[in-house]
Length: 179
Ligand SMILES: [Zn+2]
Ligand SMILES: [Zn+2]
Ligand SMILES: [Zn+2]
Image 1 (tube, helix red, strand yellow):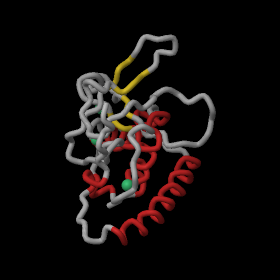
Image 2 (spheres, rainbow, N blue to C red):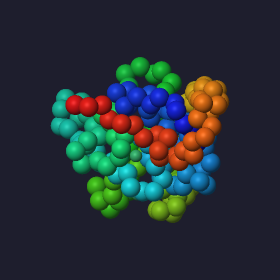
Image 3 (tube, protein in one colour):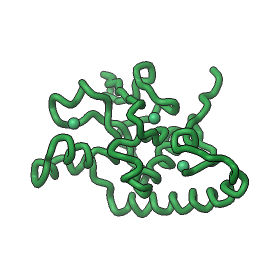
Image 4 (cartoon, rainbow, N blue to C red):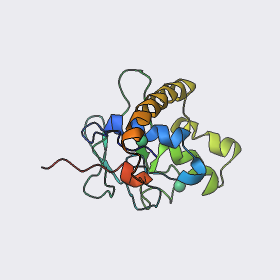
C-alpha cells in the first residue's frame, strides 16, 4: 500500500495527514467504514478514547493510557488558531446520544459513513452534523496534493522494496521511540 514512507510518531499532525490521504483517496471498499486515522488499520482493533480536560479552553486530548493503536499519539484536537488549510481528520465522539461515551471515538473522515449506515440519518437529520463530518473543497485539494507527493516518493521506495509484501497496517506501523 505505502511502504517505506517514514512516518513520524513525534509529529501526530503529519502522521494523520499521511494516513488521511489514504482514507480520502484509497479504496474505500477495501478500507471499510472505519479505518484508523493513526495507522490505517481496518480490523477494528484500534480504539481511540478521548480525555476531556477541564482546562481554560476545555482542551480535548487523545487518552493515551486508555487508547489502543500501535501508532496512537498525542494529537491536539482543539480548533487551530489560524485558518491554514490542513487535514482535519481527528477522533471525536459520535454526536448521537447513546453512542457517545459507550463506544470509542470515530475519525471525522469516517463519521459520515457512520451516521448514515449505523444511525440511518439522512436529510436535515444528517446535515445538522455537517460541520463535524464535512471536508471542505480546500482541504480536499490540499490533501490531493499531499497524496501526489506521497505517491511520487512511493514510486522510488517501491523500487527498493519490490520483494516485500507489505500489508496496510504493517506499512503504517511505527516503532514507538524508546522512553
Ligand atoms: Zn501511506
Ligand atoms: Zn490505529
Ligand atoms: Zn454513533
